[in-house]
Image (cartoon, rainbow, N blue to C red):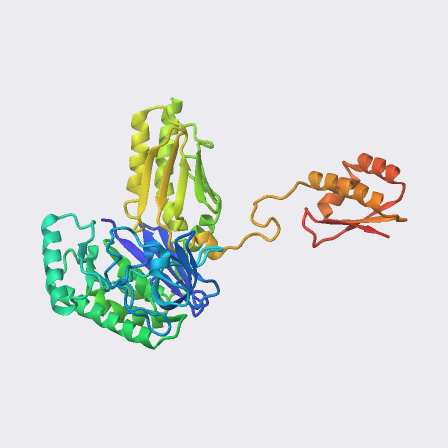
Length: 504
């Protein structure tokens, strides 16, 4: 497997981590000190509203917006007496209602009840954080599932012998160290020895015990456990990736990473470097330039074709065009080659832009079924190294490919940008011609309602230039019709769509 180089740019305000494969930026992660992501954090929440119609509840976890907890994300609890604040002994205590049917939100939660919850999705746009009471605590090789009894093994470990060995060993460790809890064996554990598994089991048991103690003492809305900071979390979760080198431009962070690696990732010792160069570390592989390109709608392909990415509230759409690519004798072959190149570029862009949710790809129409299969295979291959879960459907009757990519954090665009104050996120403005005609209608409307000796029109430079030039004849007719003079004043701070009609 080709190695990955990790570049870490750390300042007091922001941490940025770039994953570079063969000199090409494939992923960018960032975390700002004032607005850290909270996925994986555990809170003592309080139910503020139960919504039977949505089979969900809103929970206060101390953020600006209440968080969302669906019934399917609430672990069943035994019907035990609640304490004075309505707090049960914690989620996932087993039980259920014994009838075999899913319990409703009213049977699981009530307003005012305290509940231990974990964030599974950051607040996105206008939506609050998404929560679960099926809490998990990860380490390098295992994931602890408190108050559950099963042991699972990552599906990425395909060798049956390894799966059986790991399941038996972790089951034995569970019975010995943490009999009340379940575990998932992570992909990174496939080749580790028994001692590493034992250390992880004991470590996770201690972490969970400390979480329970903190939860018992915490008030509603308080954080009781925070996931690792970005620079350490990336290394912990970099499962199945051959890391060649890690370069860090902060000496303090370099020391923290060295200590973390020595304890949890000894195979990476010796691959970590402090980067003291005067040239910014992200300039080494043109990372800053790539970030700017990842914020643009248009992505150029080497062949001359291009992609157009559009994010909406519901989904992301990707359109492929041949552009200036006319390199093959047959049209079908030209289309096929463009789609193949596009599939590879889309795989990289989805990771780089961190696009999630529903994604619709409009490949150029292909007639040959074998070409369609090869393009889908190329897309699957491009996403093989994506650690985020994806699911791809076959080409639809309309020639579209529907896919999903799990979304937990905001996309790169939403992290780095905000809606344009001029167009309010539409991406376009009314033309100067349209605004001129709106202005004419407004003048007629106002003249019919009020008496005035003179009208003054305040508008942008473009609109007034058009009024006095191409629309001058129409303006003269209007002025003659209303019978009063019309003066114009350029307002430099007005957008093209803004104007005012003032009576003098």
